[in-house]
Image (cartoon, rainbow, N blue to C red; front, side):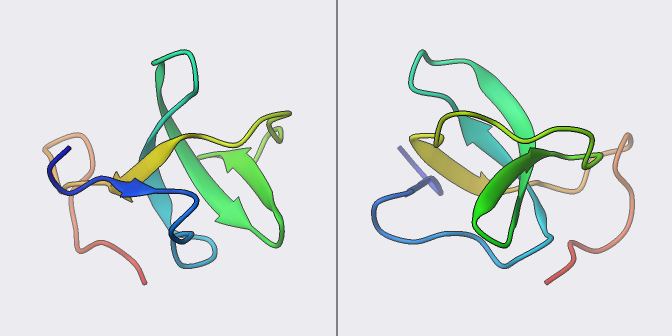
Length: 68
């Protein structure tokens, strides 16, 4: 998978919003904080670890430079 990092090979920089793929194949927008995966808005943490992650690309919905 192009540009996707397996979570068993490393985690994203802390606090940076990334696209992630859950074990069931669902695509989520998350951030890594401390030792927890949180939803991008920080509202809740997940009870599982995503399988893959990649930096969120810049889109019209997400303008600006990626953080981190």
